[in-house]
Length: 389
Ligand SMILES: [Zn+2]
Image (cartoon, rainbow, N blue to C red; front, side):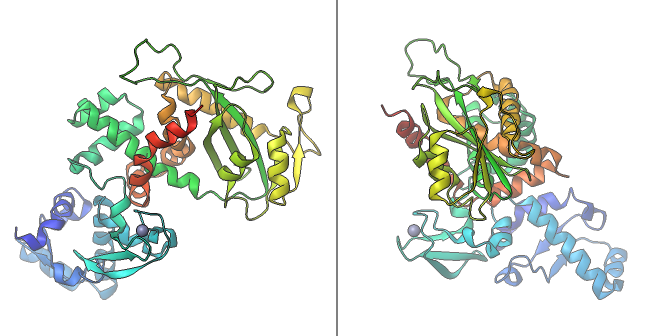
């Protein structure tokens, strides 16, 4: 195969496993036709295809041909993690954020390998959608689709590695790059109606830290505390917010009690439609509600006050927290460093599980997260800021 077709090798391989294989074993995509719009596959050379099949295709009506083209497009779109989805999300404005400096002052800058390229007005760097994706520097990328189903199963890093045929370190990197990408889902949450918010607390854990001299005793088990008077300052606070439509956010906020600043940061851009806030009446939320001009109802669960006016309560958020507790058990404690990544996973786990095709859903989520690589790179920095005394 010549160089021009190299970029499509992966699709070609996958096409063989698709329903389209019923028609032909091999497709050649002419790159020239894909240049300006990768997915308008107007021209398909059919190689080694028997004449009967060619005739069949020729006899298709225009609508049927269009539908066949669509099917092929969709299949390629699904099967190619790196290039595919960058085009699909090109209408999504947030996709145009510079992956180097997060600036939104970007403009189109021609095409590279048939893919839209951008340039950042601030840092002057060029990028493509894939530049900031979790998959950008992955080696053995072709194994990713084998890996993801094991990952979704929640298998251990070792088991995922063994089943996929990669080493444990790679398995670890992939897991956390994928989880960083899944975080985009939380970032996009917009709350409306009634928004319940509360915190839960995790033990600080250095699980997996090889430089640790003593054996780590604490394994990051969560403690969901309803009465918060006894919270010590070394516990990690996670803010859980959810509305009644199932939107939710779970964010590592700080060490110890949360402040208004923490609440502001976590809900920034997510409360623009002015949801009614329900909390247990913590002062930080009081101030947060005030500064964001939100109606705020408090229920004092500790005083056995559970529901106000029949609708104001924090039961959904309590439920979410206890589900998280249960869900986390499979990992036998997670390192505080990676806690946010696991929260990212939990927040969207059900949605992935209930989707028609969990693998496809995950691939699309990964390919749609344009700052994932940057988020992944910042894990250690974020951790150091969190535990800073
Ligand atoms: Zn930039």
